[in-house]
Image (cartoon, rainbow, N blue to C red):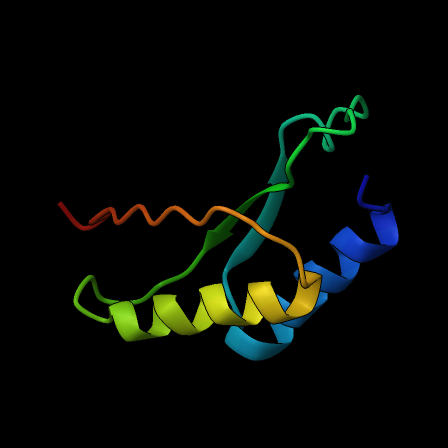
Length: 82
């Protein structure tokens, strides 16, 4: 299992590298019931234009370097100015 300190390090690396609006922990680690099979669920809220997926790829790379573990990375883009 991943420790709270490792999760905090991961979040700190993301904040230092990308200055997101927010980094939100959710899922089993957030509510205090992770198992050996649990993954870390982080929502990284950034204000970047949709076409700038290079920044998103850099974020994924940063996270991977930080945790040095296999992980899944999802990208969701929303236009809040509609």
